[in-house]
Structure formats: structure tokens, C-alpha cells
Length: 265
Image 1 (cartoon, helix red, strand yellow):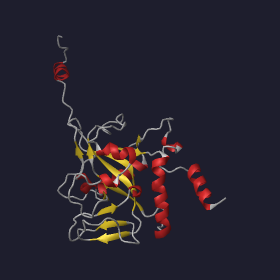
Image 2 (cartoon, helix red, strand yellow):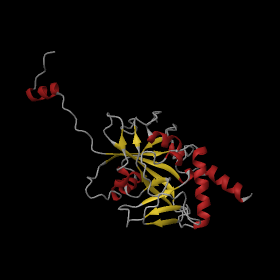
Image 3 (cartoon, helix red, strand yellow):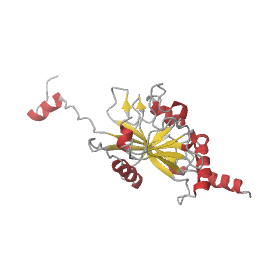
């Protein structure tokens, strides 16, 4: 059996952790794109800690993680990412065998109420909902940064290990939204080219490098990673965070409790 056919057989026999075809992702027989993590699971604790450790803005109050959803992908969308990751791995020889893959944050617009509760897992079709657009087909470099005229390292896909920095780009268009949501993405960093000064004319990393690493120093207070084509990134988790609104007490129930007597209808 050729090496290529061996690789294809392995992928079929052992689907990726984030594949909808992985039996572990559909214990009840359903194939949802978003699967809520059990709060008591080790993976929930791992992702929650990643979010907490990444909250580095001292003047920002740390928000509580309310829920975390795992993002699943159909093979036709996932496969180009995995192929790119394998290709990068052959050049960087990363010890983790995943092309120096990292989990990094990204904040964007949400126009719907996706993630506000365990039942809100269906992607909307609202044009202004960048979140659902990304979750439907992943990142599109041609659309990235459309909200901001200034692009520190050119036109690319921006991610960061700093959750509080990504929070700066999170916004709710719907007035009914009470939580905030943020993406955690698998990013093939490969061999990063370090930059300490703004370089808005960059269109790709230099030859021999796979990404741009914006380092803390002259122009940055918090680091960021930039890649320049679509198959370098795939969303992995959706983090729902914030402080739950206080429940408004029911006046009728309050009076009944206080006076221990039913009210006349």
C-alpha cells in the first residue's frame, strides 16, 4: 500500500477529533455542528483555564465562562486544513506532529443569539452575523478585517493567545443578547516570523515561514498571530461568557411568599 493510501486509510479509520464523522461526537446518534461540553469534563476545565489565563488586561473585569461548545466540521471543509497541517509539519518537524498547531482566540460580530442557551445551536443566515458565517464555512481571508481600516500586519486572519484582546473585537448586534461569545481556533502556526513593528503592507510571511507573530514591544501591548490563507485556521470551540443578568422577581409570587396567602385573581 502506498504512503498516500496508508494516510487516507488512517484518516478514514480514525477521523479527526473535530469531525462530524467521529463517533465520539455523536453519542446520541445526532450530528450537531455545535456540541455543548459537560461542565464537569476535563476538556471544559482545560478550555476554561485557557480563557482565564489569556485574560491579561488588568483593567478588564474577568467574565465568567458560562458554557463551551465544541465546533464540528464536515470532512470536505476539514480536510484542506488537515492537509495543510501535514504539509507544514514536514517542514517544521514540530514535536506534537501537528505543524505547531495552537489554540488561539478570535472575536467577531454576532447578530443572533447563538450559544445563549443549550438549545441555541442552529447557525443563523443573517448577513451581519460574522460569527455564524465563520462557523458555517470557516475563515475567508478576503473578508477578514472588513470592520477595521487599519491592519497591523496586512490582510490576513488575526488570532491571539490573549482572550481579553480578542474580547475587544466581540460585539452583539442583537439587543436581546445577554452573553458574549468568542471563538477558539486551531491555527497552524508552523514557523512564525516575529515582528515588533507595524507592517500593514505584508501580504504573506517571508519565504521559509508560515505565519507572522506580532510580538509585544514597540507597537503591540499583546501578542497576535496572523496567517494569510484560509486553510491555516479552523474554529474549534465557541466560548460563551459574561455575567448572567439578575432575574427580575415576580411581584405576585413575592407578595404571596411574604404574606403566605393567595392573591385574588
